[in-house]
Length: 388
Image (tube, rainbow, N blue to C red):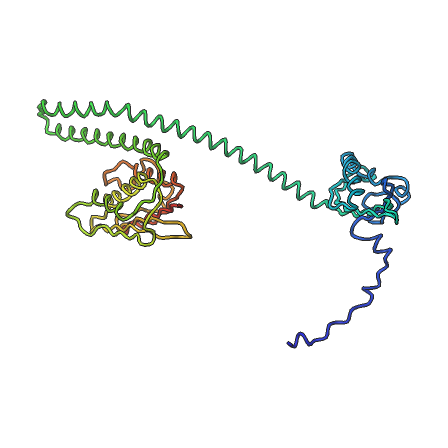
C-alpha cells in the first residue's frame, strides 16, 4: 500500500448532510409538480413557479398541466402522452414548450411517472421538467448550419454542373477548331513545298524567310495536334477500363521509344516498392511519355541526363515519381502556372506547352494529384499520387 493510500481521508462536514427535504423539493435545479390523472395540478415547486412567473395559488387546483403547454404540446399530451402514461406507467424525455404568464415560451424536457392506488387505479402523476433553453438554441443553430450547408452544397452542385457544361463546350470548340484548322494548314504546307520547288529567288534573305515561314507552319501544326490530344485523350479515357499495369516492362517500352541509341545509362527504373498500378493503360502511357520526353527535352546541356522513375507507398497511397537532373524550374515563381495550357518556362527549347497540362488533367481524371519539386540548374521531380 502506498503512502497516499495510508493518509486519512478528510473529515466530512456534517452540515453538508443536513438538508431539508422540503427545501430540496422547492429549490431543486429542475421543475417538479404533481397532478391528478386528468392533469389538475396539486403541487408545484418554487423553481417551476419562478420559471413561469405564477403564484402558487394561481396554478394549484386551478389549472391542468397541459394548459401550461403551447397548443401543439397540449394536443400531443392529451393524444399521446396521457394514454401512454396509463398504458406503461411512465414517459421519458418528451420535449414540450411551457407558456409563461407573460406569454413567452420556455422549452423543457419532461419525465413523468404514474402512481396507482392499491386497486391499480391511476392516482397521481409526478412530473419532472428540465430547462433545455441552451440545448434548444444549440439544436436550432445546428439546423441553421445544416440548412446553410445544404444551400452551399446545392450552389456548388449547380456551379459544378455549369463548369462541366462549360468545359464540355470548350472541349468541343477546341476539338472542332483544331480539326477545321488542320486541313488548311496542311494545304499551306503543301503549297509552300511546291512553291519552294518551282520558284527562284534572287534576294539572299528569301531562303531565310521561307525557312521561318515553314517553321511557323510546323509550329502551328504541332499546336493543333496537341490541342486535339488534350481534348481527345481524356474523352477516350473516360470509357477506358482500369487494369493492373506491370510498371517495369511498360516503362521500358516507353523508354525504348524515347532514348537515343547513342545515349546510355540515362534511365534508372525502380518499381520494387509498388510493382503494379491499377489505372487505364492509355492514360499511364500518355502520362509517362510526356514526363519522360520532357525530362530528355529539358536536359541540362552541361551534363549527361539522368532520369529516375520509381514508386513508393505513402500512407498506403502509391506514388509514382519521375526525377531528372535537367534545367529545373523556379518553382516558387511559377508554381501556379506550372500546369497551364501553352505555358513554357524555357523558351529556348522547342515546344508547345501542352504536355504538363495533359499530364495534370489525366492524373486528376484518375483521382490523383501531382506534387512538384524543382530547382533551377539542378533538376525537377514530379510525384504522382494515384489512389487505387
